[in-house]
Image 1 (tube, rainbow, N blue to C red):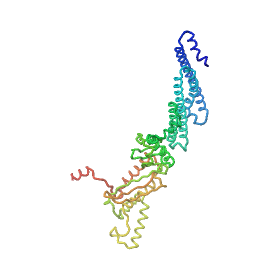
Image 2: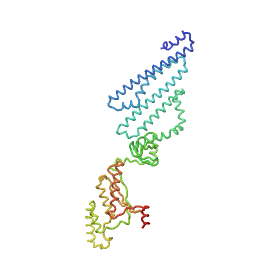
Image 3: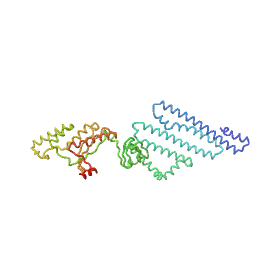
Image 4: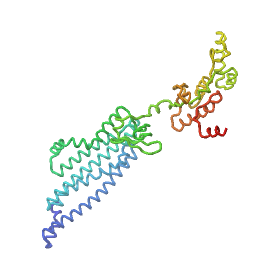
Length: 418
């Protein structure tokens, strides 16, 4: 090897060239030749290794090797042998330039650390992508853990590189670094908080990828699409993206709609405001008229018989409606709403279904529907609720009731004209 490396040098010296020029030309020729050969070798080796990896990924049943190719693991691994050969060739090329040899050796060692980190990153990203294909792990914050491993890997790599460049022993460097730990903690505060938050979010199962969350402080209202070490990305329903610090999930209050999505329905909780002066006892004529509404015919017949029997038995003076037992238009309307909801195909009958009267307000008497739609999809849920209230709003006048509405400018115009 020594004779080959100095063949050009000997040739030039014998030709009458000075030793200094002969050494310089010899070094440059060897450097160019070795680099060209190694680049060619690296290209061939890379194509061979990547080709083999692609063939294996196509024939194997597992998806893991496909992800290795996707994340460029074979490409990065193919650089190992050329880098080793370059490292071995340095003493031969720069034998007459010890200072340059030392410098190039340090550069190659640092490049080896970088290559090692790239391989680790490819493997970690492959593991992350593979875990996301598993049903039990696809909604977990895998990105956070991968980022933590990468931070540790980059930190160790930087420490080794610094040790090689400065010539300081690694353990001496780490000992000195301990004195600056307070500064390091301050610099990586968000990373540390995010790491702790990711662990707590995962252990407590607070948020999963795909969950619908509402975080008013950050203006987020949509589906979680990514959870990593520092941030949580939420795609809002208007397709915008909101980024939330991961540690905010454990420090602030937010709403996770997963419970509703996992349940059998989505809650409908809305009230009709009834004008109180339209509420009254029903006369016999009004009861007979309401019996034409098929959904409450049976109820009115049975209920009216029971009321007449009670009033007759107790000799109640029915010249005044308030005496004894009576039906009211608001009570019959509540019964109608309950029957209507029971027969509606969009309402889940196995969950809470209630029509209740709330405390009267200055606007009127709220009659609240508390039920659950059988379809939880947003558009369908809104359609079901609108369909129910379309019908009920149109049904109010049939019971001699009036819905409350603030006067509009047209009401004042009519009154002034009169």
